[in-house]
Image 1 (tube, helix red, strand yellow):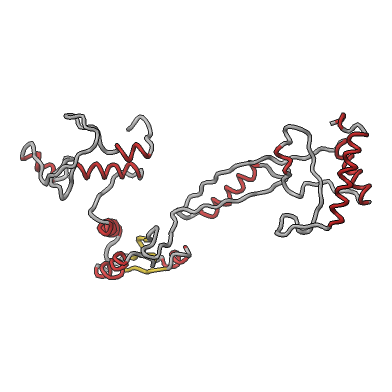
Image 2: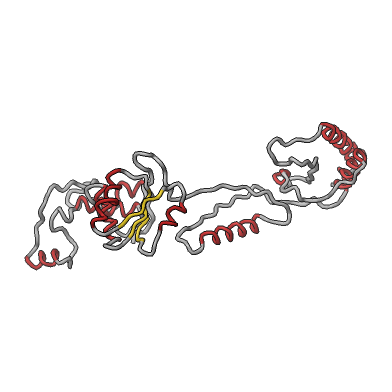
Length: 304
């Protein structure tokens, strides 16, 4: 086992190969040979019987190809790899490893023509049936699966359509919250929902959580009383002290200075075309002016 984890760049350049012990050459050579020398008849027998690791014939294994296979396995974090001469050959090797006569495949219909022929014509001759579905809706794959299905097939980028079948999905969301919650409680809640949605499937969920600021509550005191009095004087209404509006933007500075937030509550808050009457804005300006006067004339600043 390696004493460190190498990055993708190092794996692409050096995985599966060590410098040549005779010449010290760093790059892997191209071995242009079909045959290999055996130490003895017993050595040859053990190689042909797959009892000893080594090269027998380049059609089966070759040192240059072996470097490529080990490198690909390292890059993909696999146990081993098998190199073949074409993509179509790779498909056949993979499919026939998993499927036999009587088995079933569910495949995206947006395929390269040669692959479609392989699944729809060639493999049917071997008793392997394929159901083609449109890949835009994942439920199409689910509905087509039977108890004989061994393989779900799709091309990440269909040829020639150019459609994309992602191997992973990402979603971003934003939660505005008040003092009834915390970032820790919401993270746990979101994680429970995600885990419940993928339960019983082979899907995994990774939740990357970032908190811009925790919620806060301004405690009753001179500041709250000054603002409440200014609102009552301007509107003849007693303001409601609550945190139902969600997280205040004052959360970004709450640890630096005393803060409180007040403003208008409208029916279109946080909606497209949010708006309030002009008269409400004029009343709000009078409230702001009164709050400043109270702060400086009634000694509220000294009590903060």
